[in-house]
Structure formats: structure tokens, C-alpha cells
Length: 247
Image 1 (cartoon, rainbow, N blue to C red):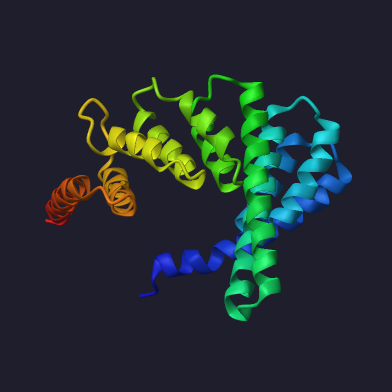
Image 2: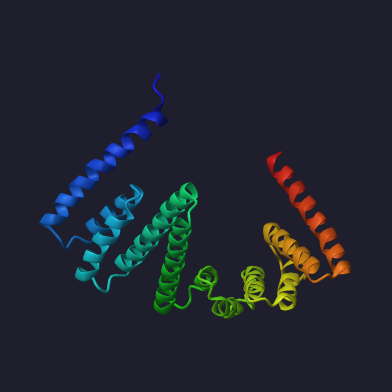
């Protein structure tokens, strides 16, 4: 008996191709079909063709300049294209292992961070209530090596329980990048050791590892021993939790 899931997987690209061609012809005849633009752009992105999606949505934005769905999908296409380029350049740089390849990778990484910053800022300007975007903005600014800005951006989230731990962690990484190790340790302790801050196990372990490294660097032997003991406990608890999930 044929595998129905396998048949569906085989048929899906054919169905998408047929629908894409239908929409392309439809939009040529009726270039004011909003739903057609959005559906065709979604198909382009599914086919990993974000550049075509970006061009299509730029055309749609001229016709529907105040349509939020077009603006949102255009931003998604811009992000997808930048990420696609970053991955492509990363693959090439890994194979070539050359100075020029490394430079290209750095430019691509910077572009990816900048596109994220632009999109986050634009969306926050349209809707300041999207608080989660501030965390994404802080992370993008960190990746763009705009450490002071990233530090300040994360600071806006410290009073929100959901974001307190990751905000402290980003601020710590910014301080480390700026060579401010002792203040960074204070931020890391807020993630790893403060009971009032509920940290995800992964984040707590990452913070403790950084605390161990900084304590060793600063020859704080007693502190390093304490952090390594805390790290051992955190890793054991995480392993136990993982085993319990599997069983």
C-alpha cells in the first residue's frame, strides 16, 4: 500500500507550483488583489525565495501603503532575505577559509543585525505595546556590536518578570564586551543565584559558566569555587530533568 504521507510530500511542491503560477497570472491581470499578493508572497517564502517575496510586497506596498499586513509581510521578507544571505556567505566562508571570506561574513552578519534592528524599531513605533520586541532589539544591537545601546535597551525590561533574567544576561554580555568584568558579574549573579529571578536552566547554566570564567580571570579563587559548585548542581538538575522528560 502506498505511503499516504509520502504521497502528500511529493504532491505539495506540485500544488504550490500550480498555485504560484495561477497567482502570478492573476496579479498581472488584477494588480489590486491584496489577498493575492499576500498568498503569493507566502508561497515564495515557502519556496525559500525571499527576494521574490520582497519585490512583490514592495509592489503591493505602493498600492496599499497603509495596509499593516503588507508592511508586516514585507518586513518578514526583508529579514528572511538577509538571513538567507548570511547563511549562504557563512557556508562559503567555511569552505574557503580566507581573509576575504571572513570579511564577507562579517559584512553579512552586520547586515543581518541591522535589518533586525530596523524591523524591531519600525514595529515598536507602530505598536509600543509589543514588549517582546525590545528583547529582540537588544539582542540585535548586541550582535551589531552596539553594546551601550543594547545594555540600555535590555534595562527597560528588568522590571518585567518574564524578561528579567534574559535582560540581565544580555546586559552582562554587553559589559563583558566593554571590558567591565566586575559589573558583568553582578548582572550574571542576578540570573544565576538570585531566587527572586526565575531563570531557565539553560540560561542559569550559561551564566554560571561565564561567572566561572570571569572569577578565574580576576583570580577570585573562592568565588570561582562557589560558582563551579553551583554550576555542577545546575547541570545535574538539568540532566535529571531531561531524563525525567524522556521517561
